Image 1 (cartoon, rainbow, N blue to C red):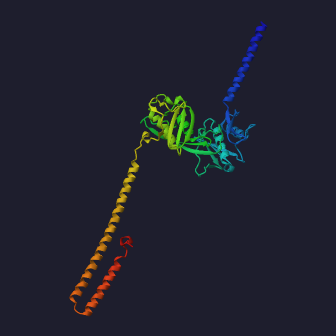
Image 2: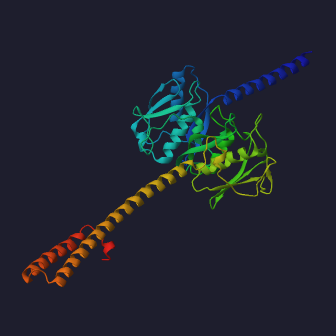
Image 3: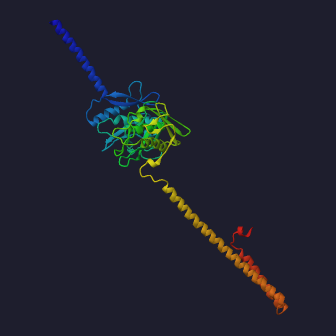
Length: 399
């Protein structure tokens, strides 16, 4: 009997030890992820931490302290004397204020600090976004514009692959408006590593779906991108077979779904004029049983809601035509006026010549009178000839 008791007691202890381990693992998984820099200074790595505090203020203090003291093998993102001077909880964002040394950070250190702070503090309950200020003034970007409120999704690939330089982009993503069945553009601002291919990021964001609740996705969020490359202005994207499946309850046709991708890439990525699509490495296949993929697709704005083809260019052309007609009419009137002036002068000269010939033939009243009239006529003729060329375009005179 005692032996049976000892066996049950031992089994109870073993079960209890398993429960303890399970509880510890659960706490570890539900802890906060504090983000640090690597010794190479090119990427973020996280370390789990479970705060002892319960109130918002105390949790903030603990997280700020952890952010400043990196564990072994990692480095704090607070470099070059940068300090967190305070924080303020707003209605929809947490404002974190840094010391002036923030602006002395180089490009890579700055984005790593920004990403680490946003990703760490956005885990605090009730915090949906983070605004960074420096000496109580909103952070400015390189162009002097205020940096808006950020959330953890604003930072792409700050962990995997590392960061060599920091860029920001405004993505033009085209999703479906269920009311019209047409595509509608959604703008999305993101910060990303230059190690990333922008075309890949556009495709990933498109797969994630719209932020606007009034729009609908065209791809399942489980679609995988196998490869992306750009050559000679053509972007080639290889998907897994899931790309051929429509989202649940979607009535979007294959053409609209395809141009959601094509328009998003061509509209966002400079230098990309066309898109080729492969599925599991094959281009000799069909997209959603309708569209052959053995071709290059170009941006198609007729699939976009409220698009009117070339209406603006036609208006400009008409305006140019009208302006040209006015100029031609003014020029024609000018030449006509000059022609009339020349004809008048020619007629006057002809009349004077006729009078001289008349006096010469008739002998005149007397030689003196004839000479005087001839001198007056010559002077008059000379003045008219000289005065008639004033203001006339030399091109009309052949000079």
